[in-house]
Image (cartoon, rainbow over the protein chains, first blue to last red):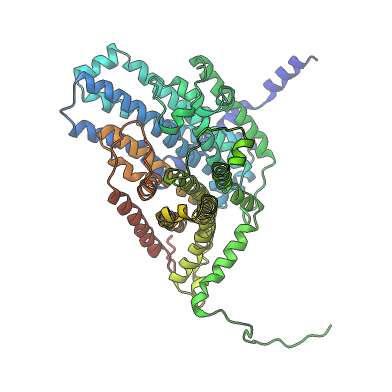
Length: 288
Length: 294
């Protein structure tokens, strides 16, 4: 039998339906523990703090509603998205959510229960990743959408003209797409780190340092970061400031399609790595 | 096999003086930290900016070195307030990374394993416990902040002549004041977060997050509200304000939305306020008894 026929036979023999239902069950359990628990208050705070700020601005700054302010607010929204959400909010939320999927179980000394259940460990990884990704998606997509709506709602007809007859809808779509990609990109990185290191936060901080200094790296090295692809997708580009501006290397931007496919491929590769890693994962609660 | 009768015998060795008993905690915590080879390496990495700065000071003062490096008459940046503020800011970031690593190891494990009553049942009170743990961070952070920067000051003084040191004696006060404020902020915030969070991984993330996330939110406040007061959330920026003011150096532009400077008193009020708030949190959390619900 040829190699492709073997592969096809292997694929058809696997219990995909069982695995997917197991993964969904695990995801549901983790969702209840992550998204709907009181302990997740800080993720809500991270996601919705700028929304509250923009809402206050919409309510109290009722005088600033001219076209000039609309243009300025578009830049402010781009700043909030790129500086707060992309660089900090989503990054830290993913660090917390995805790292806690396994390390949280280790800290609470409950991971062995999941390892004793007759479920493949790879399915466990996928189920937990789904739960983390859904949590991050729901919170940050809602937050970004609310920020966008509140920012333009106060301009009335001018705002709706910008959104529905101007570039507004395209901006919104790109913000939502970038948010989704950031969630799965950073999420997969932190899931894998949590399976490799006992304290994945310290390598996580190195990842953050890498992502921050990335614009001053040579063009080829810039492509080895999540932030590079995300920056390319942002609808409004912010100029570099301070010392960073002096050393920033402008790399050729990649087309949006390649950025999206590239990030998806990186995410899948990291999850496959995590699946291999979980096979040899051992728990020693006393040392962890 | 002979079996000897064993009975209680009191300790007859040397006893640590009462006022220095907190140092026992410091000693054990330091040995625990430095038992990790990675931490020792990281400690050395944090001194890299200082080593580079020392080389820079040497080249600036040595005509021979400039000739060897073929610099000719090219004027280098002088060793002034801006230079010292930049080294100290670089070292302040290194100190932050060190705190993220070392801080959560000090208190979090004691609390998560309910070991605090064991400490406090010995002749050691809460203040001494905190002092003992804080002394670890103060020692480590001193080794990467004011001590190496003062050594650079000494190097520059010896190379540039005694008059330079006299003319710039105010730099010493600025270096010491800036470093001590930053060390106090880092130490107390790290101990407070470790005491409240308990889990080491989370404590590391929270300690770093408290220095990185609020500045981002502060920039959002600046952008939306058209103000510069959002920067009071940016602790590294406030330290930079204090340092540049005391060293007479110009302040760099920060953030895309506002270049209006904040008043100096705001920086002092916020940093001192953070220290007191951290102390209050520690006071609330560190108790000899623990109420377990459920």
